[in-house]
Length: 376
Image (cartoon, rainbow, N blue to C red; front, side, top):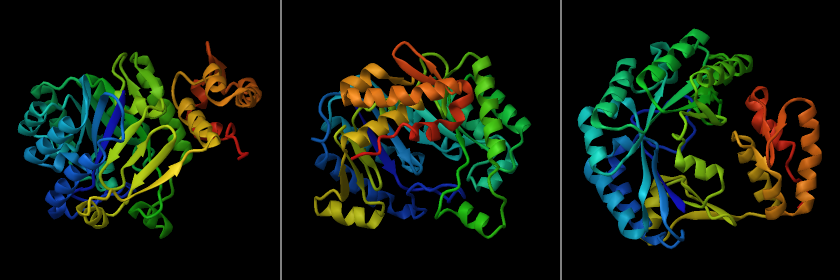
């Protein structure tokens, strides 16, 4: 089984914190769609076997009209062997999610929506420069459920200067009351080349408070744990049996194909990424060439990535898998380091390896880096 990700590189406006590749020049959507259909044909041999998941992300996929989405989905169906139980996700901004749109997406075969709520607090939405209102966030969920969507995920951003613990608790309770089965919670990060970074550098906005972020991360984890949810990945929470199949496959090292400008692909042995420039992408595709760079993944790189993504998941890493895939020296390397983290109560033993304790999850990436294999 494999997955396909399609990057739709357009947005109505730029959120202050976003460092993903996108353009507000929506007049190029038709040109993009035409190029994407060609790229799908050019890349149809990249994956082997059935496609289990298809994910339309961005950017803002909900900006595309029904005809454009229909052409893309039809081309994918014609070019790949799709599973009958495929998970087909579309990311949607609340201001695009009308009752008619929700029904149209369902007719196209979309069976999972990821809604970019980010917050139900008007001051937080304004601070982030989001395009939608609190009222539209509520309406979006109501419209999705009324249309017949049951597999719905909502994004929240925490750790913003304007967001109090009480605000965050209210946001979580709203989603629980709606019966949403999946929530992705992301800590505000300050990335270079974003408006947020520039404003902090100019001191027109205050720096991120890491203590606040750690506290709010704990609040989220506790609230959803008490509600019976699984904290199955550092930023992702779900009701039992409601995990994102597509993202879970990423974290479990399943091959995937990325289509569109800036999209990444992975086939275990190498990773490649398309040019992050719409016009260069259009020009290259017109010449029947996919504009990408590729990196062959050395064993040490594969191991480091395995440790990073494993420690972000509730199941942790498997010593048996490390031994079989990377060899005994890697297994011994991990076992020796794990012992010290176990003593510090940051790791706990599982049936096959170790997983992070609840207290250590906020520091997952830092802990993972201590396991990295630095020798070539």
